[in-house]
Structure formats: structure tokens, C-alpha cells
Image 1: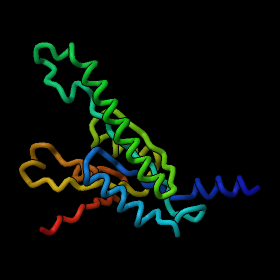
Image 2: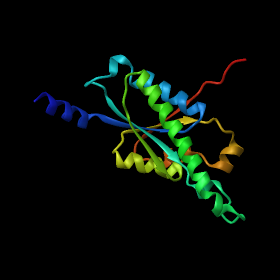
Image 3: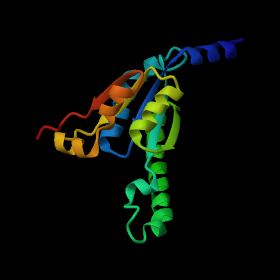
Length: 169
């Protein structure tokens, strides 16, 4: 009977999807989110959220000039590097969570982060999407595009952007 009650409580919890990459801003956002939403007093059956961490792995062709001579030959090596990088990001995220006694669902999904995160929100029926802010200026944001800007306009849930404070000095 207690197991069924725990399953119902887990199903009733709101879902928080967190996008993470290999930046200091992303890890800061993860730490901040764990501190403010998953502190020791909020964990356990009464915790308000179930955490899903999503890392987006770029496709090998998205990081290469595909028409460049020899690009096809290096695709397997680029893919292997991207997989290793994704594994490092996931491992670090798990370590940060385990230090707070949390075991979130962690996914690695290949594609453009903007679309992958919005799809993850829909897939998990998330109530909130959390992203770190890279703090790009207007020009860099215009050239690279902003994942957080796209998600605030397209994700069908609340989007929280965690900004790392600028260091004084």
C-alpha cells in the first residue's frame, strides 16, 4: 500500500526540466537550482518537483563545414569527441546531484538545443524549464542565437533563466 502511495506522489509531482551544457554558467544554474528547489528540507516524498536534466549533443555535421574537403572522413572522429564530451557533462551533473543526495533522470539528446529542450518539456509534461544564461552580448547573441530566448517564446511552460552573478573585482 505504501509503494502505491509513493507512486501516486511521484506522479503528482511537478516536473522540472533543466538544460545543461559544459559551461560554468550551466553548472552554476544547476547548483543554484538544487539549492533553491531541492534543498534537504524539500527532498523526499513531499518534494515539489521531479528533476529531469537534458544535455543536448550537437550532430557531427552541425560542427563541421559539411561541404569542406575531407569532412566526411572526420565525421566519425567528431562524433566520438562529441559523445565523450556529452559523457563528461552528464557525469559532472550526476556528481553535483549526488552530492545533494538527488538522483535525477538524465538524458542526452542529439540536435539543436532550442528544439530539443522544448521537445523535452512536452515529452515530460514539464511545469518548468530551467536554463543557465551565458551572458552573451547583443552581437554574439544575434550571431549564435539564444537558446533561452527561443525557449522563453516557445516552451509551453514557465522558463526560468539563472544568471551567474558577475564577479566584483
